[in-house]
Amino acid sequence: MTSRRPRVLPPLGAGAVIPPAAPVLAAAPWWAALPGSLPGGLALALQASLPRTSKDRLAWWRDRRRHREDLARSRAAQVRPLPPPANPTTGGAA
Image (cartoon, rainbow, N blue to C red; front, top):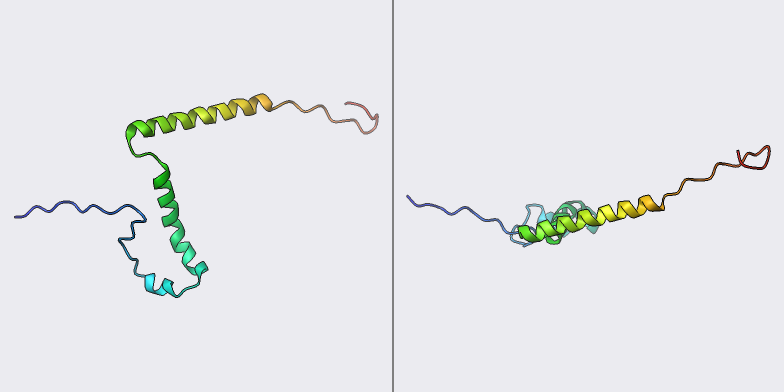
């Protein structure tokens, strides 16, 4: 009995797999091939943008959370209450 190693799939965008619709899409206009290529492109961009090692991943999420908290804090400091609307009959404040 031979033991087979599990098959490791290549990362997205490696070009190792040709979809069955490739010959049809080769002659298709660009707008017909776009819906099929967008999910793969988005997955590839997401995979490339996130760090791979756990230490880097943890630092990335900490920095992201700290940045979002700083943004929320600065936005909360910028919000000022609006003055009361002018009274059209007297021409002054309500």
